[in-house]
Image (cartoon, rainbow, N blue to C red; front, side):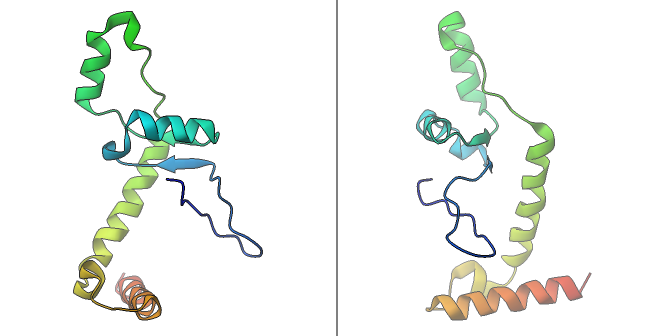
Length: 117
């Protein structure tokens, strides 16, 4: 999470995005605290085991983390795009050795997906 970079048209990339949309796997306390310290809004669903543990503790368990369903729906769009790109074997297995060749393959796959619409 510390390596997050958001590209800008000019200049250095930003290191503090406004929102992080993540899967349930990134719902750990450490990640949420890291994002909170950096003042980044986290849109991460709470796994069932964490919710059950919090409820088991009662008032000591604290309140559930905030969750924005409409913002989380945007993550679904990105995930679908990534899944379409993973249909290309070279991208899914990272067969290309250099970053420039991999990026070129990514562009070709994206153009092919866009043209097929």
